[in-house]
Image 1 (cartoon, rainbow, N blue to C red):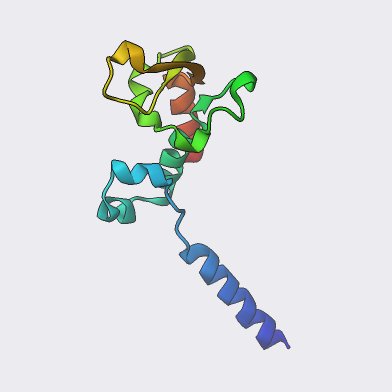
Image 2 (image 1 turned 90 degrees about the horizontal axis):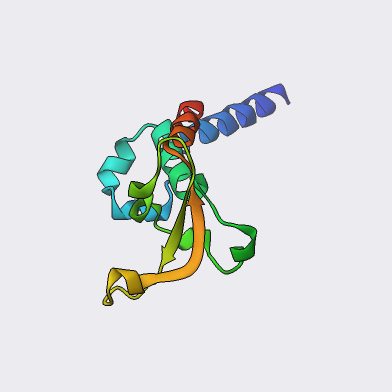
Length: 123
């Protein structure tokens, strides 16, 4: 009985540690599979934080803005060092002028300071 429990425990521990954190699917547009496979686990978690938690959708747009469809890399240049920034969601149509390519829906980018603090906590 103890042998069975020990074997099960060792199997569970080995499977748990063998699984690498999955990277957010949007990151594949910016990294190759080889680059991703060589990343340490904490780096993948930092990238996932960027895509999944580095912005805030206001309550009035919850259900209207799908956070899984935001390519945050396209907005990150607008981040401010010490304060959150309101950015308008770009429409999917890209053949019009930039000013015509913005919707009335917006979200807030976390500041660079907040992002760096989160990255440090992930390490």
